[in-house]
Image (cartoon, rainbow, N blue to C red; front, side, top):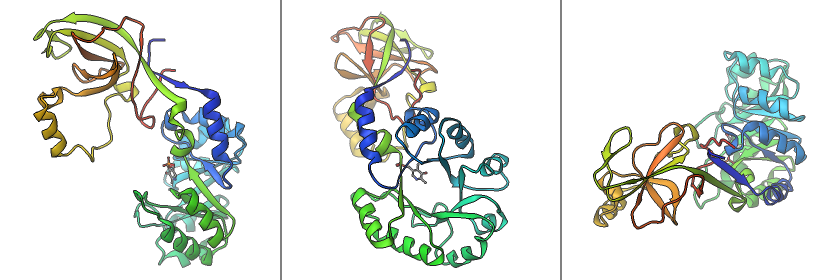
Length: 337
Ligand SMILES: *Cc1c(COP(=O)(O)O)cnc(C)c1O
C-alpha cells in the first residue's frame, strides 16, 4: 500500500450501523464522497442492513444508488425540470424527488414527490404562508410526504420548530414527515405529537458515528536529511532547522490540506502561537500527519498525491513503507483504498 487508506474495523462498524438502524423510520443518507466510503459502497451496505429507502443528494448520485440498491431512492436537492438528468431520474418508479418550488410542483406529473417546507434555515422549501397552495397541485403526482430540513442548533433543540412545521404541513395534506437533523429524543417526541410516520434522515451519525471503528493511514514514501536553511520543495524554501524532509502519500487529490472555513482560529489563538514561537506563527502550516507521536509541519502546500513534511533532528525518522496516522475529515477525503 502506498496511498491514503481508510481502515475499517468491519465488525465493529457494522455493529454500530445495525444499532442505528433499529431506530424506526431511519433513512440512510449518502451523498457527495459518500462520507469517505463512496456512494456506491454505502448503497450496497444500506441494502445489507435492510433499509427500504435511502436518500442521496443529487440526481447523478441517484443513478449510482439505483444500481447498488433495490429499494426507493430519495433525491434531496430540489427538483428543477430544467435539469435533464433530474428529469430522467424522476421517471424511475423507485425514485422520489424533492420539490421546493410551487411552479415546479405545478408542472410535474406522474412522479413521486416529497414537498419541502422552508425552515428557519432559509435554504430551500415552500414557506408556511404559501403551503396551502400545495394542495392544488397534488392531483397529478404521487405525494410521498413532507420534508423538513432543520438547522443544527449547537446544544439546543429544534423540536418546537419541527413540531410546528410538521403540524402545519399535515393540515394541508396527510403524509409522512421526513426530518433532517433531529435528535433521538426529539424524534420520539415528534412521533408522540405528530403521529407515527416520522422518518429521520441521517448520514454522519450513521456512517461516522463510531469513530473508533475507523482510522486513516498514509505511507512514508521518502526520507531525506536536510540542514537548516537548505532549499527544499517546489518553492525551494529554506528548511526551518536541521532534520528530515519526509515525503508522505496523500495530497490535494485526497482532500489533504483542505479545511472547512475556519470559525475558531481567532486572533487570540494566533497571538498564542506567536508567543510560543510556534512554527505556524512564522508561516509554517501544521499538517494532519503524525510522525513519532506528534503532528508535523508541512514543508510546503500539499502536492496532488503526496505531501512534504518537516521532521526535526530530535525526532526518530521513519522508514520508507512505514504507515503513519493522518487526521482527515471523512466528508471531504478521497481514499485510495
Ligand atoms: C446531508 C443531508 C442530511 C444528512 O446530514 P448529516 O448531518 O450527515 O446526518 C440530511 N438531510 C438533508 C436534506 C441533507 O442534505
